[in-house]
Image (tube, rainbow over all chains, first blue to last red; front, side, top):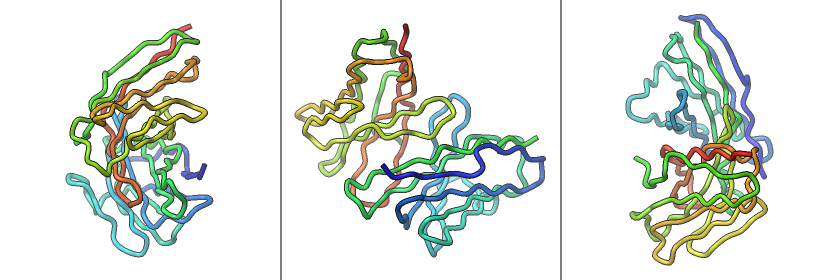
Length: 117
Length: 111
């Protein structure tokens, strides 16, 4: 099946700094990618939908100025957590649906564990 | 909100079949049933999906009731590596909609 990668796999940053997470579709093009956040022992929560060449769509309650999303190409979306705080520590997961090959499955990246100290 | 209901946890003996139920009573006619699993600290892994017919692949079988209001994922010979949280999701195919995750079922396979 298709592969979605994320980089870095884990990152530790200091409070007040910004951190960028990359999501790549390795063998297919994705006009739309999704960003999820998962806190310990909880399910995945959709944060935003990343659209290639246009603005991202954020879920209610997600601060667009804090979680900057850029989808500059058909294979790359980035999530930048700005002015990170300890409460932003979480597991961030991206996904993409391969809409060029049936059955158009949604593939998930391995996740990025962010720890803000 | 997720459109599915799953038991929060289940146990299964190693080597036995694991049957994971899912209720999706409000499923629409064009929505498929997808199953994913998430092993600790990893991204979700696709398992199988179906519309109304039973499906089988190398990982599992999916049994969907005739009224499509519920389904069962079957892992025929569970191993310790199948211990994970299993998510049942209903979603229309062939579009760019995201997958909405419910709480899932935490399956523990015991030796």
